[in-house]
Structure formats: C-alpha cells, structure tokens
Length: 251
Image (cartoon, rainbow, N blue to C red; front, side, top):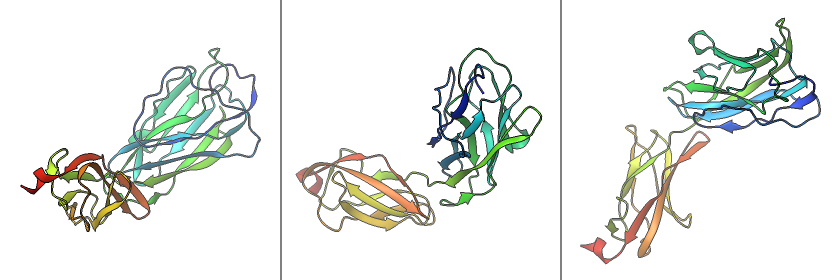
C-alpha cells in the first residue's frame, strides 16, 4: 500500500505503543517474510486515555489500488485517528469511531509498503484496568471488497500511573517519613528506593489516596523514591522524587 506495486512477499512488523503519535513522510520499508502470518496489533491504554495500535501482518502480494486495511474498534473503545500520512494512502475514521481504514488510492512512485499502520484508539473512562476489550477485527480487502487477509488486535485496559505527593522532593526528612500520593482505587502500591528495595506498601483507598510509613529507617543522605501500582495484572509507575534524610529533618 505505498509506491510501485512490483514486489511480492512483503511483511509488516507490529509494534504496540501507549499514547498518541503523529506519523508523516515516507514510512520504513518492511522485510520479506514467509507466508502464513495474520494481521495483528496490540496496545495497552489506561481508562479515559488514547493510545496507538500499530497494525501489521502478512500480504501475499503488494496491495493494488483500491485495497483497504480496516480496523473495527473493540467494545468500550472508539477509533479517533488514522495519523499515517504516507503518499498514496487515504485514512478515514468511521462514523461514531466504530472503526478506521487506510485505502491505497494510487501508485505515486514510492516503493514498498509501511512497516505498520497506526490507528488511534480511545478507551472509555469507566473501563476496568486489566480487562481485554473484545471485538477488535482487522481486515485487508481488495478493490472489490473481497477479504484477502484478516486478523485481530489485542487491546488491554491499562492502569493510570500513581503519583507521589509526599514527601516533597528535596526537603530534609526524618528517617521514617510518611509517604503518600494517589493511585487507581484498589491498586496495590509499593514504594521503592533507588536500589529497588521496598520502602513501604499499601492499597489505594476508594477515593484514590494512599499513604504508608517505612518499616525500617531510611539511610542518611540523598536518595530517590518511586511508587509502583498494580491491579488485575497491569501496572504503572510514578515519577521518581529526590529525598534527603538527615539532621535537618529532625527539627
């Protein structure tokens, strides 16, 4: 689907990405691969967020003018964008975000096909982290609408990243300061230091707040803390904060 269609046996390599992206200009070229692969793609997206699923797969021959790659959005999500802007392709979002497509409209003299086609998906804000959304269908059809390749994509509801709001970065601390922040309600939160040692752990409350106190004294001097949240098999981490444990923190 991009440039002269003289090559055969072109494979597309899939990449899963969390977050939105903009794609423009000539795409990378795919390497040849053995037949038998299916269209595929995977992405993890937190509730109420957008992410990009890169759709890849196997094509027995380079697609002809009028061929189309279509993604049907799984339940609990919708397609909000088709950002690939390579020459010879036209992207479109279906009514209501029920799906999206890329159609090969003309041969513009650029050889090969893209390594993957990006579709932006938005996941509902009430989606439960760890859930696998059902019904993501991929199809490659020719100009007459006949299905040439098909497959599915895996869309997993991710976990919003936790935050560390206390202690404040750089403020001198006692040896066992209270550590607190926010996380998805019910998530298990673990705070670790720069050496990946567990400092303390707790569960986020129904309002998303959490706090814990180190079981043992933190070493004197500078260090770092980071919180990790996990729920239903998915996880996320906070930004690191710099801490200082020392005499000034005992005042």
